Amino acid sequence: MALNKKTVDDINVKGRRVLVRCDFNVPLKDGSITDETRIVAALPTIKKLIADGGKVILCSHLGKVKNGPNEGESLAPVAKRLSEKLGKDVNFVADDNVTGEKATAAVNAMNDGDVVLLQNTRFRGKEETKPEDAGEAFAKELADLCDDYVCDAFGSAHRAHASVAVVTKFVREKGGNCAVGYLMQKEIDFLGNAVENPVRPFVAILGGAKVADKLKVIDNLLEKADTLIIGGGMAYTFVKAQGGSVGKSLVDDEKIDYCKEMMAKAEKLGKKLLLPVDTVAADSFPDPIDDPKISTVVVKTSEIPADKEGLDIGPETAKIYADAVKSAKTVVWNGPMGVSENPVLAKGTIAVAQSLADTDATTIIGGGDSAAAVNNLGFGDKMTHISTGGGASLEFLEGKELPGVVAADNK
Image (cartoon, rainbow, N blue to C red; front, side, top):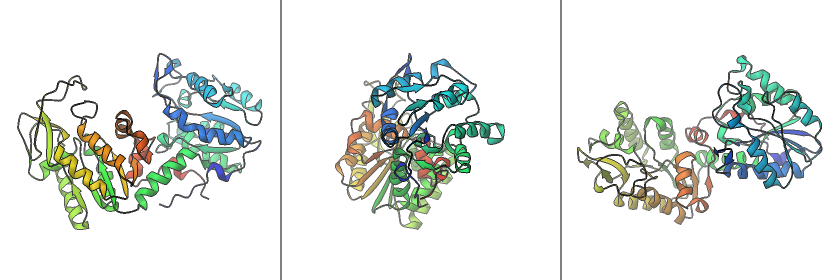
């Protein structure tokens, strides 16, 4: 899976209309943006296209709109914030059809270096549908607005949506370029190529609640990594598969045999599969989740009392995991080690984050909960790369081809 895609540095956009699929799926509260990370992440690509004299047409989805327009999920607040960040006016087109007359008129009036933002692509109602359900018609209308297309929305790259993948077919038909932006390129360089062609030793750390969510990731990483570390709720299914007693801990009984298979596979391939040796346990899951008064005990992971539930890796395990990271040259981490939202149960996740911060290895955080945990705990600036996609980064770690990546032109 060598990923050698055409980027914004490979195309000449002067005087050309460039449609850029961004990931502006930002959290909103009472119409205000509460976290602008995704807007900031899109700026380098947008600034490059403006500087090169392109007519920059931006599009994105926001929220989980299913059936047409919803005023609370308009991209208007994004246009306002983008204008401030870019220091120039971003013309927001409040056209619920997304590609209707207003959008066409706005694009036709553009000068080189101008920026237009289209309305939430999901307001159209055909963004996510199969091509035969008019997704193709929407994609063609998007392509009609532009000469070239740039995908910079890694968070949506695992979905074959009209504005992510289908649009490229029509842009290509008219002789246009289909490239990736700087954000997509960074994700391909780190997540895609690190897993396919890592500098060794390569250590992969997987956490989170359920084994079922990471089946293919575990399978793929066992083949690619030298050491696979398991933490979080998913560890207890492995421990039970070994014959341990895990009390009231989260267990996926349907996946016991799968865990046995994976442990056998690790042995056969000569890979290290590390599981927690001690656990921070409590009577029950904290309620509220961030309750600092929760009472805990540290017990052997294979001997959790029947009335207790494992909620974080213990101190001895944290030390073993940190030692495994010390010798690594590449580390990929997806999923917290425990209930990281709780100060008492975040210690295992903090210890692993600290070990990554202290190493000279290339450290890659695979989006979602682990990205949130690393940022919230103050380790974000110590990591080589933090992925902007949850589902997309998981599918990359599974070894899957992502429609948004595949759709871009090869160099």
